[in-house]
Image: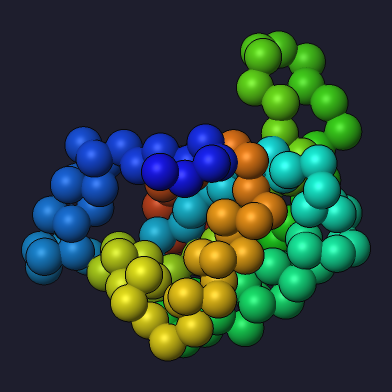
Length: 133
């Protein structure tokens, strides 16, 4: 079992799979809320920098890309401590599902395991600018 707290939501994965298999598959934006392990070197050093470099090169293999990343400096409500928000865009739900089998995935997921202590990924529509209402 993974030492990090990245737990798949199987109900949501089933929804993503159903969308991918339908005629309604389209762009999707995945908003990643990440907390990094203390020894990962977050913000831009060490393993964190290596992970980001590999991730930025890896996502285009499935047609995806990082739209933006931003460190989190605090939170006004709630108890979920995160270090960074990362918006990853994919041309389809199927592209997101293809990540584990795509060339380069082994290195990407190895680095994710070494760096990410906790993650939540929210699925959003990917066919409009995420920074506009």
